[in-house]
Image (cartoon, rainbow over all chains, first blue to last red; front, side, top):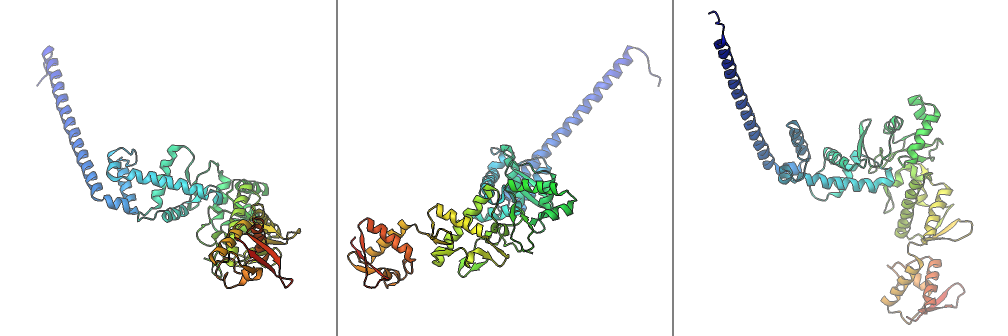
Length: 248
Length: 179
């Protein structure tokens, strides 16, 4: 049918547009409502889940880590506030705050020995020794607690050196050279100037300079006692304190 | 863990750099502290009173990691003890060192208690008897170093708690308690 010209036609067209819009809005509203409903259900489910597995979350580090992962996926941070529902329900905030305090204490206590750089594994071992109760602590827990310490702005940081993770509690800036030396030291617990020069093709000045800095920062210790007469630089932060170090 | 007899050695004893004097001050302070504690602990449990710097001393070397302390390091650690009143050089050349895991005053207190516990308040004993008599067996005074014992006795003598006098044999002295 041929469209009729005139004011009536325009009015009809406008009315139709209005109708379409209305329907569209309705559909959108229904969708949002459904989403909201779903989210609410999901939240209840998650709460239900958390409530049901409260003990598992508290006691089992692997379970706890998976729970965190699940929360992260749906954008919930149980640690965001200590006042929130999650903290109240799980007491999980307190768990990490306490852990954080203990980590700070251990870092301070071992600082004279390691210069403020501690192997994450060793930190965990020391934490477990302190916790007389059955609460197990995993590396994942430590990392979470340390990330919360960043709020304090006092330079608690986790750095990766090779395969190992080190926790830094002093404001020392380690540059690339230092990191490379630490990585090299992981093999035996120590390095020599020669070894550093050869491995990285550095000039001897560059190697000595970097080693001297590490020494001054208390991160390295010298050892002149080996029978080959070569000075060894040991790094307490990469060689574990809890096992006897075998010399090669 | 490594042991010396029944003595449990600390972890740092197996970490080679602790056998080299550290050049950085903070690190060195920590190192000296650890060694001081170890020396005192070891001497107390093993009843060692005198350390000779040039002699073999179990703590001065660790065959497991093939490290031993230089003369300089030995002297540094013992000097640190001397400056705290926990040791005394026996000669000017710093070759022999008397270890006081109890200070002389504390030894005097131990003798005082020993005398009280054994009802010896008005008795006479020889110095040798105090060291190796039946009464001192099982106490800390048993086989105590003679130099330390004499010092502690002099402390008590100054307080009028006893009098030291020459015995019949030239090499032994007598003690008259009056507590």
